[in-house]
Image 1 (spheres, helix red, strand yellow):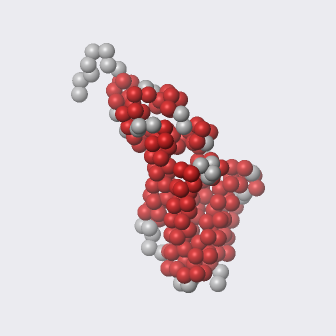
Image 2 (cartoon, helix red, strand yellow):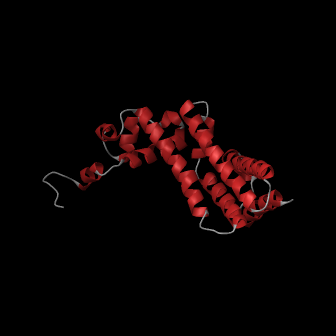
Image 3 (cartoon, one colour):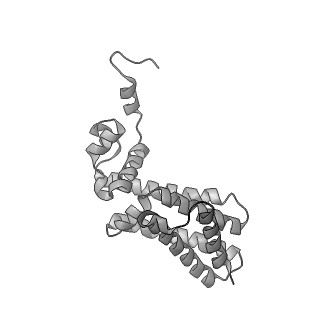
Length: 197
């Protein structure tokens, strides 16, 4: 497609922004500064566009926050579950999930930021759904491994609590956690402990 006179590549890029681009930018802002970081003008500057692009996709800031939270739920829960499900062995899925989830959470402060703003009703609703989904999924893995439903639910909660503790420590006191090969051995020992009957 030929550019019109006066149209720059940057202007063409602006026209291609999607609601997903805005949601991703909002998530990045939340990771850095919590919900307060989601402001239209700074996000537009970050994306190299104008507020007009924002209003093309969203009616207001609350709609953007909702879209960003839904995107986080999809990317950080549903897509991970789909990826892990490619493995047939439930024990390998459990181990892979714990390694992937703790690594991702250590690299990205978004989860900690969202937990810190759990008093906001929008965040609380998404955190509740995500927590139930994650614990339920992990509990299902324990059931596949032969644990009864009640014990599997208890272990799912324990595994998720371990993940959240690891996530918090990785941002608050990272030197308290092992690194390198020690980190992998530690995570394996967490799963081994959970699998003891």
